[in-house]
Amino acid sequence: MKKIVGVTFEKNGRMTYFIVNEKYEKQIKKGYNVLVKTDIGLQFGKIVTEIHNIDETKLNKELTEIVKLATKKDYLKHVENLKESKYALKKCNELIKKYKLDMKLIDAFYTFNREQLIFRFYAEKRVDFRDLAKDLASIYHTRIELRQMGVRDKAGQVGGYGVCGQKLCCARFLKEFDSVSISMAKRQNLALTPNKVNGICGRLLCCLRYENDCYKETEEVK
Image 1: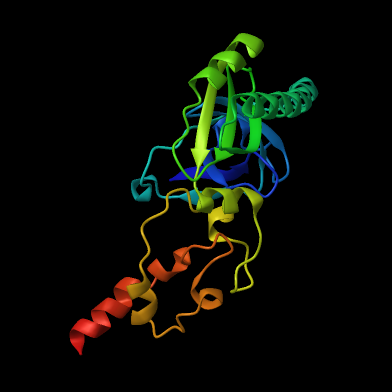
Image 2 (image 1 turned 45 degrees about the vertical axis):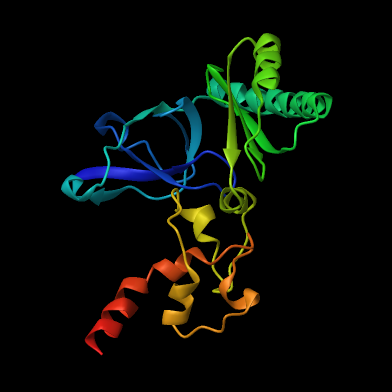
């Protein structure tokens, strides 16, 4: 068994689980700030769950440990990173206008040690942002990543509530979006009107997949 907690990196952001190191077990509590290692580097996050146990054999991927509890100095550095990220977002928007690129910035953020500066943007089509990336790298002297997001990703970042009355799945836990088809809605005898089967992103509801296999099995039995 492993002891884990859920951590978020932004307000209303998706939650990611991390293993609690034994030496921090008695100190870690919901609401505390921590530093964790992610696939993009060291990040500052906030614990949003209580510690609970999980059977590690049931995990579908390997989890990393919390690096340390954040100190006041770490928090101040995080605040400074947020401030500098806002300036970077403004500068990037100016360059987008300069190069007349068909893209809309969603946000920008530094990893904790500023090893990377990541810009997330929405665009209908593929965008050639090579010149933009070069300019940003020369200005900020760090690794630049421009990450294109889909409409579902954008909805997850903005957040909101679905027709079920709960927070959007894409804002809470969905990290990968499987294909959803209108046949899934038909199989569940739903009214095929946009306000019934579409999410706030304008695409088919991701939750149509959740019980689709059960409905499919029922069809086969009949």
